[in-house]
Image 1 (tube, rainbow, N blue to C red):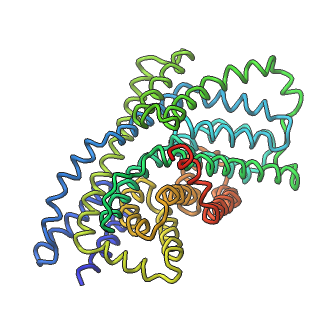
Image 2 (cartoon, helix red, strand yellow; image 1 turned 90 degrees about the horizontal axis):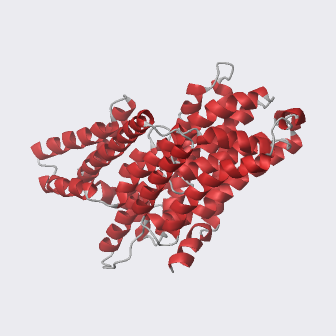
Image 3 (cartoon, rainbow, N blue to C red; image 1 turned 135 degrees about the vertical axis):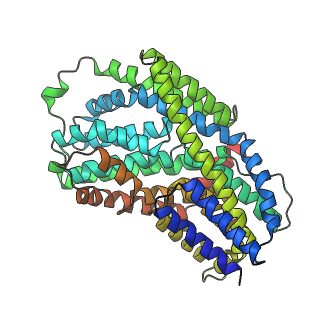
Length: 459
């Protein structure tokens, strides 16, 4: 009987969130209210709450999570130093002679920004402010322009170093250890953030390639919707080659330093994140954009984002303890194990639920609340943890794009001119949603796309 109260707890937390209350306090508050009610009626064992201090101190002492504020600092510093603006202008000139070239340049710059910042909201807003007016001025179909900006902006979910992958890596690692304990296996093996970074590399690049192929297809079947930049405008630029080298090399070097040190085993994600933070400051200094005002703004933004992440993590830990105390994990396990099709059916249900929750909740809430509940159960069904993490990441990325509540759509709507209707934005992202769903299907059929590189590098 009491296990059904866990479902009521989950529903209550979602309702409180939809009412607009703070995520961290909604999760913790709902958990504590249901725990107090359960203790009063002798439905809940208070011993579960005794584990809360250890959970919170475990979060505070987790070295991996230090990478979060460092990567946020790196991303915000690169955003403030106007590197994205130069990248977009240069790539647009480079691909300008091609129909759809401006859209392709937005995809590639979105990929570079994703690898540099990993912050979806900042990338969508930056790309919307910089590229949308230019694309509309060049005669691009508003649906194509808004669709490619939203889709490119969400690449920060899957292209490493991604904050999503850092958080998922920590949660999947804990779930993997929990699954092993539940099966009576005592092994030092675990899943690291570096594993997920490597696992996401091929699917992420393949996703970018599919975006570009769609734009090429669009240029063939509807050339007027994606026109080339006029030759007289391109002729005004002197020495494009040196400009490309000057603008592209510094951020590419930074990405190589950060990712290369992690993938090569030379540094942990936290150590590499500190390299990225310092490197971003060096790039800003080279552009003469580093001053006390900029540093103050970057540090304030970093503190706000990091505080939000860690407060949500604390609230989600209390929520999950109460959920587990009511037997919710057993209820979910029985439900998934009873699904027709075994682990395939269970995986489809979990992915569908996460996709639908992505309409209403941010990836952080889903990562900290839903993944710890379902991941141990799926891992006990002999599902590869790296593949599972990448599937979750792409699924969350897709929900960021899906109308009517996709967060990327709201970000772009906030900076798009009034001449662009919300309906055009919604219609524009549909082809990219289909591409990402196709990517999920490809990854489901060929899991090696996510698992081969980590196993090849780490053995």
